[in-house]
Image 1 (tube, rainbow, N blue to C red):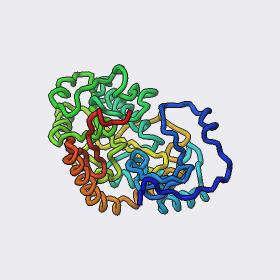
Image 2 (tube, rainbow, N blue to C red):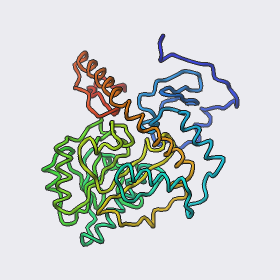
Image 3 (tube, one colour):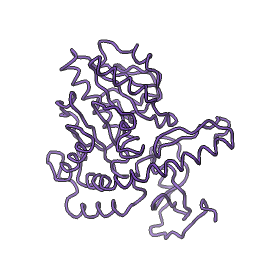
Image 4 (cartoon, rainbow, N blue to C red):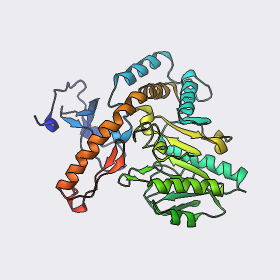
Length: 352
């Protein structure tokens, strides 16, 4: 059976014309001309009934798969109780999820947001607040080339998508996995170093263990903050709750997103020790930490222990399979951690 031609009949309930509707959408980028209508587990179905095996799980957001029963039930139950009381009011789901996150990650404080981009913006804002109070107004952030700390770091924290366009004020980029270059870039205006443990969109490039440990040591010796962008690597994707555990390091500020909500928009910024006594007064959002998103996050959190038990075995299976392909076609070795893997391909083999 050819799984990529697996199809099932789809009921046409509305007479929806995707082509006509598409004309009204502002196009952020070119997209394949497919309209998906259903998902289950690792599979997606389009409006013609054809099934597709989703190797990326929604680019990392569907940490439990498409439409898992635990997530569906949690959302249904919460929708019957409370959807959104408004940004000014606390609710039980928000407080419970923040408590879970802080306890599980050894953090002191946290704030819930809607996207990983916002979490990275908040991390930068917090670091600069810390710089005002502790480093005579230092505000410079050092990042690595190829990093993608969210897609909108710019509105409030001046950090646009860092691997595109010119550098922005207050940000310095250095080569990834190059500790001497990073060390040379630090000056009296530096307040933090912000890195991804694995650079996903750069081609799944894991940080070297010695590199990340060296960065942490530099931060401690020089009295600056270490920010880890774990939007794409956290919530078990690399085999531990946080990828930092794989490296034996500890960040001062963490950004989480993607898999935290299991497909529902949810992110968090967490602070530890030195960076904990800060504010996010100017970062309020009408949907930040809303009850529906928090219900999704708590459902994901409850499933994480079982998820971690599977990542090592399935990650090994994936790594070995990619390794066999690399040998057969004389490609570079696969690289990654847990269930986040990439197989480098020659440019000539990529579709145009």
